[in-house]
Image (cartoon, rainbow, N blue to C red; front, side, top):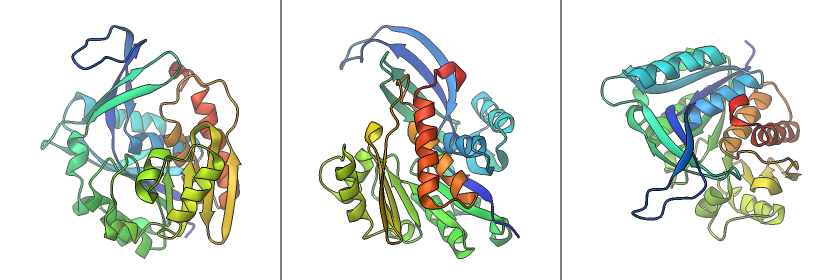
Amino acid sequence: MTRDRVVVLGSLHYDITVATANWPSLGETAVGSAWAPKLGGKGRNQAVAAARAGALTEMIGAVGVDQFGTELVNDLEVKGVGHQRLRATFAAGSGMSVALFQPDGDYRAVIVSGANLTLDGDDIPGAPFWDDVAVLVLQNEVPDTANAAAAKAARAAGVTVLLNAAPARELSVELAAEVDLLVVNAVEAAMLAGGAEPHTLDEAMAAARVLANRFPGVVVTAGGSGLAYVGNGLSLRVAGEKVAVVNTHGAGDAFVGSLAARLAAGDAIEVALRAANHAAAVLVATPEERR
């Protein structure tokens, strides 16, 4: 059986985006100029990005039995992402977030994880499910126990486990032991590797080399500077593509989803990284309404 499928275990959020010229200070109410709904969650975003990049993609996750949950499921259907393993629960509402955007594309957000935190080992499929899966994608917006259970099941079946360790948090020994490829940004790299946040390619490479002592493969992204990779006897840098930035929100998820899709298609790591780097550049240069 050909292994070419991408499975994403992760979060789904119904996001409310607000455009504002100024961040509110403590106790202040800032004035916004517009708001709009946007479906998100790192898991959902990465699954959609993988499907957009051509991979047969399925998502494992949880939503509440509410209107937000209905819209999140419908969205996966429209985007071509399988959702047979998506669980609807009465135990919590669907995950949601509020994100504030400034005109230069910078943003800040607050999430309420809701149903995403109900995921556990019981949500992880048994052995036959993994037979045609090439890559499992994980993030840190669901419980570590669920991630560890999925990683263990997938890796035992010969699946490549990609962990996007975002948001930054300490990883359990059980999860870290099952990761084949770690993807982190500057903030996450600094927390896991120690030291300052890497902002140049040389600094990203230094952080990647430290983390490569713990993981077989490591990607450290450094925003517009590009990324560094260390793993399997290979070290490489990929410079960031120069584009007119419209909105940086979701760039990391576009990168991870595209990377997973290219690896599932059998691309070499350097080819996959360059394709993922391009996908992220295209996203940040694309207006929100066209994404």
